[in-house]
Length: 335
Ligand SMILES: NC(=O)c1ccc[n+]([C@@H]2O[C@H](COP(=O)([O-])OP(=O)(O)OC[C@H]3O[C@@H](n4cnc5c(N)ncnc54)[C@H](O)[C@@H]3O)[C@@H](O)[C@H]2O)c1
Image 1 (cartoon, rainbow, N blue to C red):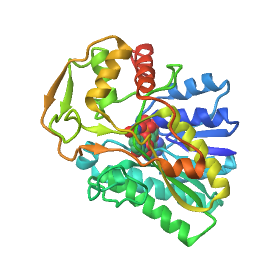
Image 2: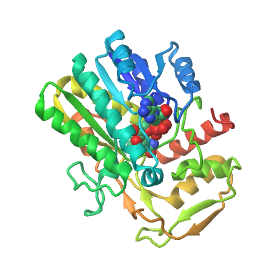
Image 3: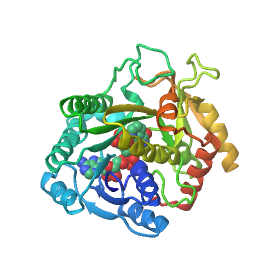
Image 4: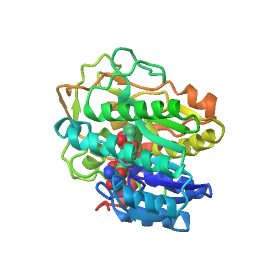
């Protein structure tokens, strides 16, 4: 298929673009490079053995998007472009609603106009509310608690309404849990700009000497070792999950939601220990009070994706840490 990948120069998008190219799809990457570099597109080309088409364009530039989609006769859009820092979304809500909600809206309008009806959306486990205890199945109550999570929820709602209005749409909203790791080649991976919010990039910052010690927010949660528990999923598993979802949409119209997680939770200290094993270095840490908004545990019920699309995450925490560490070592200056 001819597939547009918005945000394809970013962390997850670059891995998915590569996976699609290796599955013989024609890939067109659209990214404004606000949180990435063209180097990752070059690396994807190196790994795939041929280059994807690439446009440095904002998804809200409707004229340009229309021109690109019609020039390449795009058949499906995988939509990764967006802002993703929860804390920043609280201080900059307008930027988040504009980029994530308005951006998606503009994209969908162009798609409707051009008759493109297949869409895969990067949603997030942050859409789940705190009314229920984990694990979260897709039908669990929703209740995001910050503008980032609201923006994801709003786009899901928009997509659901769109599918009701016109049954020819084929849409999958994929709710990622905690993406981690890198391509095993060490050529593409996560390059955080500024101080990372997430655990794994911060641990890597400590391992590479950028930060003196890890800050562990809370060791008094009702979990086995008192630290927060999350469902980490290897970015390579996420990538294969997108190809599975695209296949699924060939047989299933309408709005479809899938969790992409492993169904297994690991604590902060388990992640630290695993990084210590794979790197051979100790990771000093200090315990600070809980961060407002953080929950004790979050992990997925991952059965639906397995039953419906025969997809499940295969890679271990060990391989996430190993591949992330390999990427960090091979790219000391990032890119
Ligand atoms: N990484 C995570 O922990 C996580 C978890 C759940 C969901 N998600 C979602 O997955 C998607 C991809 O996340 P990621 O981790 O790869 O982030 P990323 O920042 O690495 O990638 C996003 C890409 O989109 C581009 N972009 C942003 N706004 C744009 C715009 N208006 N027009 C064109 N390009 C634009 C950025 O330059 C970047 O390359 C995001 O929508 C994110 O919200 C990520």
